[in-house]
Length: 203
Image 1 (cartoon, one colour):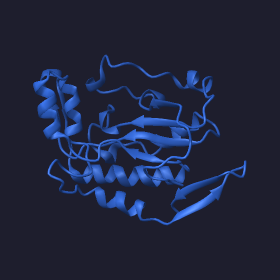
Image 2: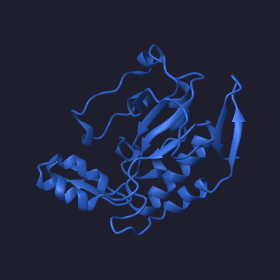
Image 3: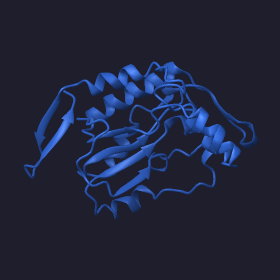
Image 4: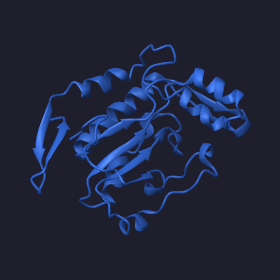
């Protein structure tokens, strides 16, 4: 089940999920580091919970189209960590086209595709008993980006201009309604094998 935007566990490690499922990152992330392989992950799970960070619109073969997301995206990631509690530390999807011509980046996007990802994200997280889901950027950061650009920020950081659940003026994107639907679900108290209470959303 899902507890959106709340976590009662100590999150001690997160990994970027792209490499775990054998998908290369888009050019947007060249040179920004590489997460461990899933074999290394299995040997380093001395943690309370294992959370992944994933932005599927950046993965090759998806490129802003949520209909192209593999249906086993999260189940494959989940399969690498055994019985360890699982969560989504950060995620997002573009609601408009993101382009950085100086880096040869052009990733189409629209609100319908973002909404499709949110529905898939929450349905899968619930199915896989995720303890929490965190949408990283709640509001498009166009205005902040203008200030960052003037300060010499890397153009890749402009990706946050299109990831919000509302635009920079506060107008909701279509996907916000899916998100709110999950936040409105009744909270259920369930018990794990150690009889410790855990709070979950979902049915």
